[in-house]
Length: 202
Image (cartoon, rainbow, N blue to C red; front, side):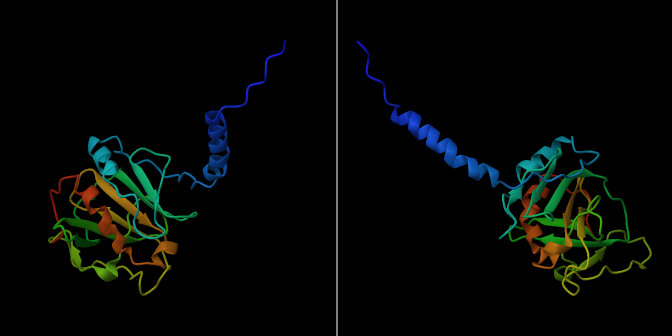
């Protein structure tokens, strides 16, 4: 006598359906961003910084995974905002130094650089911040960087934290600068504050 064939269980059908439904979603995930690792990326403080980073920097700037330790990225397409912890700690300099104050009372000092290369700097909006000199003994001959709001998309911008070891760099590509203010860096302040400040802009 032949036994009746068993019907697939509801659980099995559901699991198969979920697997098929998930396939196109996985295919639509944002690609991993290649970011060069910083020299001091293994510093334990960098781990605290990365863990405290926000999931989003605003509309269209959601987090993306990166290829290197102590790095992160936000944004769509080929020009995301990127962050590296453990870059070279800047010493006294005549570069533009700005202080960003948050509503929670956290102050973060950044060196501002206009640079077409994302390899070693972080971006900020100098048009929205007051400039200061990081070294009072340095000659006051520093050239003011261009304002990315006055010349939208003309160059990439980078920020490097000043007075904190390890240092953190944020690179903002010209495509992002052209579309929005870089005031979203304020959202990074709680993470940057994981590294103690020992000096400040003057």
